Image: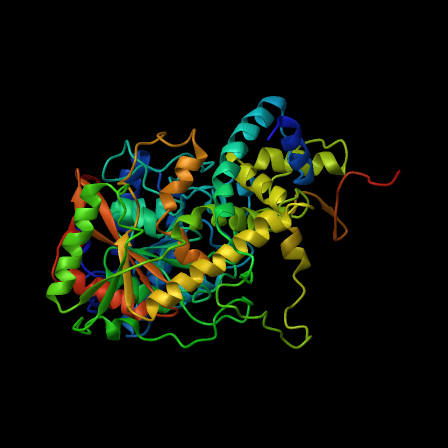
Length: 488
Length: 93
């Protein structure tokens, strides 16, 4: 009976738990068994925590028995291994933090725990969230449940694979340049990256602080709305946290789309885009128009500059953030250092993988004396142009739509030798991070048996609108209901 | 970008790298900076740089101690400590 409930929305599952149709312990045990069955192939978790999960499930059952608890009480989820979890290894998929037991919980982890969610463990990811294929993890690549010879996307690839394969009901992720939306697209999920500052970054290991944002990978928009509401909100521990009230995202899901103004950027629907993906986007737009939405072609003229600007801003911030890993206070320390310089260099040389080192070096270079204006200042000026493009667009439209990624999930190893080709995979997602805007990916018609994502970008703090559009699309289509063979 | 340039950057970034790694990085960084150079086609002379997406300034709080001392907990995960200090190789002979 539990098995049949796995495809249900989280709200329905939570209601069944509340009606005591089954216990959270039974449900959690079922998910742990599924993890054990599928993990040898998928590698979507770095750490599974069965004992603490079952203990939390027992506590949830006690709460449910006295009709207490929150909207997620007893619901099993997973956290990307970038979020600090007290007493549990928090590796960020790096050898540097292979032995790091976090001394505290990230705010996002605390909030979901307070809402009653059960954490099954920590999901695999690209090392320090730097990657678009989950192949830079110290713990090995994650396989896409739709085709295990292909990548799940990255950097939240473990969270995406785990949710797609039915190993948890939803998972947290982070998105610095597309790391929630692109894996959601590759794995057939609904993923949301809210506005910069919407979710606290406290306890979320920093990659690029002006771009990083926490979000959700879920099976449908209603689930994403429920989880996001529990995660979001002001946090005094994060000095960039937005002090804005969190609306009830679920309350807005059913608003009609009559009169909705959709903008389709001509730069996104370009001749280089796979024509089959373009057709899938157009099919989805057709359904939205049938519900009363109006389509308008718009222009984001500087969007082609988003990847070059990002690969200055993100590495610059990464090189400063990752300076904290020095082999002294926590993390990997090289054996028998000759002197302090040797301690720093070998601890970092051994602790970081090639992609992380590449980005630290790019960042070090662009911030070094004599190059600052040519690279960093220039990239920040382009960042403003990209933000202005969006501001002009949102004067005319409510939501911007387009593809999430230029291709479907590619083969493992296909792009690892060519960093620039890998970076260009994020061509459609990066501009929302540079501007700080909320973005989503929603499954649309598959191509060649592989999932395809429709990207929705909204104005600042318009998460409710994005979730509403995604939910309405999911009321008249069944793309989000498709499950890979691995989920059986 | 030459291997010698990368060696200099790696030194600034405190990253140990051997000769073969330096060659590899030199070739990859050359490709990446060729892509980054696309920015130069855009005239930005009159554009103010954007540092924060919401253009907010850093929030301040009163200078009061709000957190307890957790030195012991935080040092329990350090590679090497003694008497409440972090240990590193001798810097001054």
